[in-house]
Amino acid sequence: MAIIHYLTKIIFDDGAVASLAEEVARLELKKILLVTDPGVAKCGLAQAAVDQLPKPIDVERYEKTPANPTESAVAEAADQFRNTGRDGIVAVGGGSPLDLAKATAVLATHAGTILDFSVAAPNPKPISAQTAPVFSIPTTAGTGSEVGRAALIVAKDGRKLAMISPHMLAKCAICDPELTRGLPPALTAATGMDAIAHCIETYLSPEINPPADAIALDGLSRAVRFIERATADGNDREARWQMMMAALQGGLGFQKGLGAVHALSHALGGLADPVLHHGTLNAVFLPAVLRFNTDHCGDKYQGLRAALGIDAKQHPADYIAELNQRLGIPANLEAMGVPASQLPPMVSLALADPCTETNPRPPIAEDYVGLLDEAFAGSAIY
Image (cartoon, rainbow, N blue to C red; front, side, top):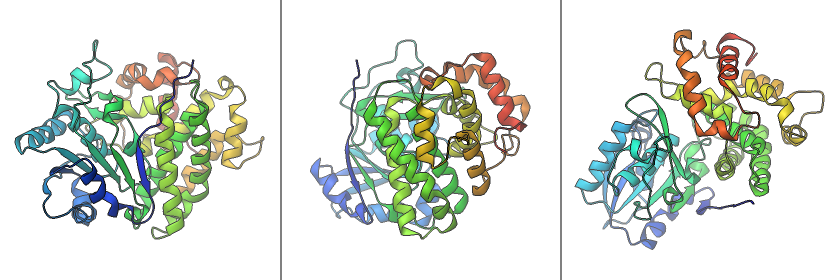
């Protein structure tokens, strides 16, 4: 039996941010908490969203989202929401502010902590329809968090934990490619590879969801055709539009489930030092995991090759490795500054991650040891 959910209202096009006022008015909200991060606040993108709101709407700002959102930051934002009497959240930024906003919406309206609502809890507390409404406005093209029903938060003990509920879906995702123009090349490449990893892992997941498969393959095809253009020229309007659509499609698709790439990236994403970018981690792990899964996906690698635009002689892992090199993605975990001493604890964290359950080849501890070794300084990239 297949149970398929799609998903929430999406407004997509250049200039879409202008629709924010109408969407907030639709829910009759009066007191908004703006959630963003220091970089997005500094460059004026958050203000561009606030400027769409009519003057009677009272806006309180939380601009301290960390690079990987933390339990402490969510608790702080939730306190600010409650203490200032907010009735909704507008999240502006990449995946970190968008995830922090969704988690804040839960903690501001439910008693408990991140640990209580995490899927890793022995008996997770239910997340109800009382969750505060969130409007998501992405400023990068990668995470798909604007249409995701989950938030990934780094707990105080260092674990990266998932909160998941349909009640966490944004009331509206406002996707304006204009907000990604001028994004630096390295961040464009890393977030774009995040979208590619989402599309690939969604498609290869053994769960039954043909609509997600179709969305993922279309998103993958767009991403591989436009990621290098977007990286080379931050003002290429067509490339920015196509990459934001690919990122959105990755987010729509991964409701089906992801895989070992994300299980490993989530594990390392909890490190306090070095702080690692999620999309870059996905890019580094993707070739190794594609090789690991080769004989466990039926005929899906044929569909993967078609979307990538390669022939039967080329392994998708080799294509991704070469794309990483052209984009300037770090060669491996060692090049990202990860000490080898930090790798052993990652095995158990990856095994416990929900994404492990939907990898086409079920990994065991020894498999994750091998994948980490390969990604550290072996042939995982080039």
